[in-house]
Image (tube, rainbow, N blue to C red; front, side):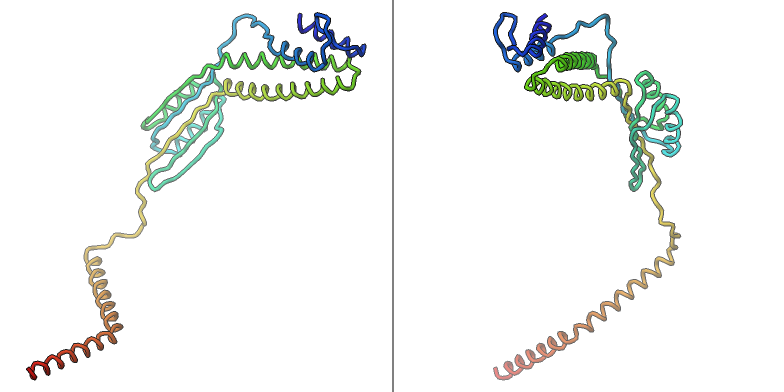
Length: 273
């Protein structure tokens, strides 16, 4: 009733050009009346009619070792259409002795449990699995009602805009409409994302295969061959040592001369004594 009275005063003022008055006959500005209209309308909640269905978000994770990772990947790909599911994201990585696959699968909520059980059966060795449910019923219906209230307020502002002749009031109404539409777009984006999370469950599947130790392909050498290689390597090392000694011959010569001179001097000193 308060909303109707305020809206009536706004329309009468816009058409007649007279100041706005509230229910007590006091003059009020357009801005004050518009703010009161928005606050009253936005705070009103339409009572829920009948029971509401529960809204939940299902998520799960499966980790397992595969005996043949390529075969298991093909099996998962082939089974997804039967569950109306699809791979949203996938990643493959290869280490020294391990090949890994990571898949993010989206599946309709009503078929999530069946797909979860089917993939678990593929595991050669199951290492980890978990499944969780997040109840978002209150968030879903609250957001839905807020959008409906904002759209109802937008419709009333549009109706008021058609009946307003004052330029200042038109500008104020359009400013309010822009704010309301921005809020509606933001909430509709949130509602769309939430609805998608509810209708399509998320299943993360990580599986890997242990690879054999890589072989360079070269034939193994016999003991005799390795012994000959050892002797050859030792001889080459000895030759390298000799080359190094020859390279140092100036130092060896100087040391020899020094030792010889020192001995001569010491011998002379002994003879004198």
